Amino acid sequence: MTFDRAQIMQAAWTIARRFAGNRETWGQRLSRALKSVWWDVKDAARSAARLAAAVAERAAHFAGRSAASIRAEVENMENTDRLGFDGIQRLSDARRALAEAEAREADAAAEDFAAKRALIAAAQGRFYVVSFIRADGTRRVMRVQPAALKFHVKGEAASEASRKAAETRAQRHSHLQPVWDADAKAPRSVNLATILSIKVDGATHTFNAAS
Image 1 (cartoon, rainbow, N blue to C red):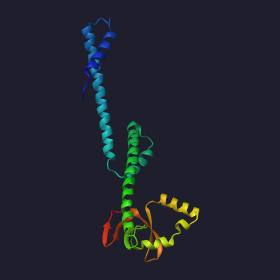
Image 2 (tube, one colour):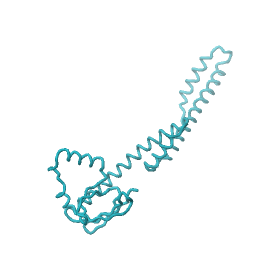
Image 3 (spheres, rainbow, N blue to C red):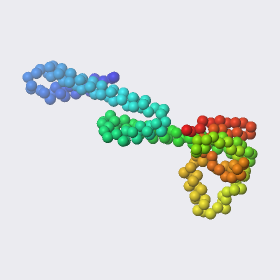
């Protein structure tokens, strides 16, 4: 810790002049003022160090954690009757960490979805096989025929209301990829987040599916 000795001396002189006439010599007043100023400066430094250590400890507590785990902790603290000053600070840090984790995970998901869509698009009119986890937790393997899907959607021929509804669904459910199930001969939606593998052009690309 570096101290500004010039400022300390100036503060001590100000205090010493303030107590002129109290029967102490100038040297005594200045010595007492210097001790007082030094004590205040060092106490402030200790307080700042304790605060910095507490902030670093809270940051380390949330570092690298998932948004889900941080969210659970935030909810637990919000349901606590009394938090106290430290608890309020911890809750503030937790909310900030949650926002950062959500943004980080959203960016990672967007990159993951883009990579999967690029693989799907690379199939063009050829068949590909996708393995994914369904909503009920079971694994599903689907043979997809990309070229067939466009013949079963209205696209520009759809009414304005239908197009707007389709756009809204796409925005709200960006994780869902519409496909044509070649075996069932029906349109389906695949959750990009739970895809385990995509086999296209004889190559199998594997992924870690979201839990």
